[in-house]
Length: 153
Image 1 (cartoon, rainbow, N blue to C red):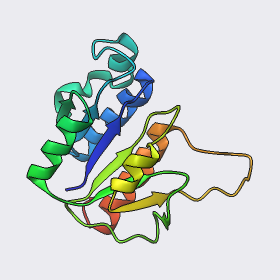
Image 2 (tube, rainbow, N blue to C red):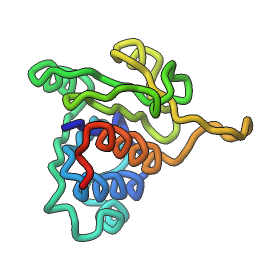
Image 3 (tube, one colour):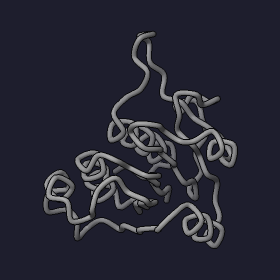
């Protein structure tokens, strides 16, 4: 099963929406600190509704802690970025992929993108639109991976 990883998320409702998506699909969610909010934030809880008990959420204090956790589990790290090299729709996902998304304000750092096995982008036709909302991007990437892997019923 693919896993969703949010690196330094800043906006509580986005993280709450992604948590709800992960609950609905049974997908593990990894939050890598520092976070731009407290996990007790009411907007985070509100966006996730009453689905938080159904989210397999893992909190990693920092990138070093996440790297160690990932190393133990293995699998490819796929960085989603407007600067990605592969169109996510044309990319072939594998069951043990980790879908990495950066903060709403800065995305994934160039250094972190260099560490990824592949970098993916979501195509946009309007040249003035730089990116999509984080929760939309995570949902698109996750549902495409699950669709390809036959995990949507």
